[in-house]
Image (cartoon, rainbow, N blue to C red):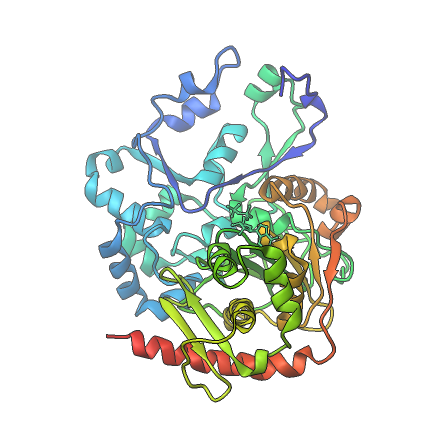
Amino acid sequence: MREAGFDFSRVRALSGSGQQHGSVYWKKGAAAVLRGLRSQHGLGRQLQDCFSVRDCPVWMDSSSGPQCERLQRAAGGADKLADITGSRAYERFTGSQIAKMREGHPREFQDTERISLVSSFAASLFLGAYAAIDYSDGSGMNLLDIRSKKWNEALLEAACPGLDVLLGTPLPSASVLGAVSSYWVRRFGFSEACQVVAFTGDNPASLAGMKLRQGDLAVSAPERQLFSNGVSIGTPLPPARVSQVSLGTSDTVFAWLRHARPALEGHVFVNPVDWRQFMALLCFKNGSLTRERLRNRCADASWERFSAALRQTPLGNHGYIGFYFDVMEITPPAVGVHLFDADDNEVSSVSAQVEVRALVEGQFLSRRLHAERLGYSIIPGTRILATGGASRNKDILQVLSDVFNAPVYTADVSDSACLGSAYRALHGALQQSGVSFFDILKKAPEAQLAATPQPHAPQVYCEMLQRYGRLEEKILQELRP
Ligand code: ADP
């Protein structure tokens, strides 16, 4: 950026995001090095001896099964752990990863003075001091009580006694942590007043990058509160009625939740924009690749024919419902293809057109069912923002709109985590003057309306959603050993 002539002195605030769940282990003495970074040298050279663990676990690590068991036992069961932390135990979540590190590398662990997430690690570099873990990314650790916003003591004890000292106190995601350190001022020409707003996880940052607008947020009078350490926790917002459905290789759903209702599937995090609210995150493995398989089999490998099949079949598909889990699904944990007729009898073949609609309706019924189980509710004014490769397909979006009974918008949100981080930086910097997150987004490019629900959609899909839930349960029961 410097070589491109970017004027760092004009940056008022910065924030960022990091891949969720990864952990960084700072060696004893590292805080002093961070504080005293010299502007003549780069970070790599100065920080190379600051880490007690060289190869840190990232989200792809799934080797912490025994530690997950222990966390769940300490909580009183998987459902209890989900209720406290927003998720049942997951191997990639940081709590079990830290516990495993302590057991597998006791010497290195002993030599650790602080543990950061990837996000708070990056913030620490800018701050020249250890940055707090924010509530939202902290929700991906299986350690934070998402309601009280404090580390859960029983879980800390189960992961590693004394862990609270190593983690520091978590803070709201919009907290201003301080100014950039003198390293950035001298080396890059940042202003001394440039503020560092807490960094968060990539998924929460993406949620903040969604184009919320006035209809989604009824902006209330600013309320300001201060934590005992003087950090502002910002202006609380009333609930936004927007969710994002990403139709990529996998399908993911981010939803803004008013209330947390964690379940054994999916995740509830503290909301990255308004710490009093929550966000849901659900991931479905059988997304575009399954749609492509059926396109090839039922529509001569043509998206146009696939779309035509959707246009030529009625809402509700004469009662046919399909479950297409080509690979083991995450939500719910099921595999195999199951097709039911209007009397709930499993059938093996239907016309190509009916099969296309059974797939797409089934996928969106599943997305809605599981989002609602986490506390998502569709109320008047709800909007869906569709992203990902399949959001190019208007007929797929029409089914999405009908099943959710909400208008669907599309927006080019590539790099939404980056964009969300920029919005969050501005929000953090301006919130003390009463500027809301919505005000920040006023000039953001508008999403385009792509589909609106057909009048009889609610009637069709209300009933179908319940049937879908019953049939899914039946499939899961049959899969159980
Ligand atoms: P990724 O998750 O890998 O970033 P993308 O968001 O780029 O994926 O989406 C790629 C997927 O989009 C492809 O697998 C393809 O099936 C799907 N796709 C592309 N064009 C269409 C279309 N017109 N209709 C439906 N799906 C499409």
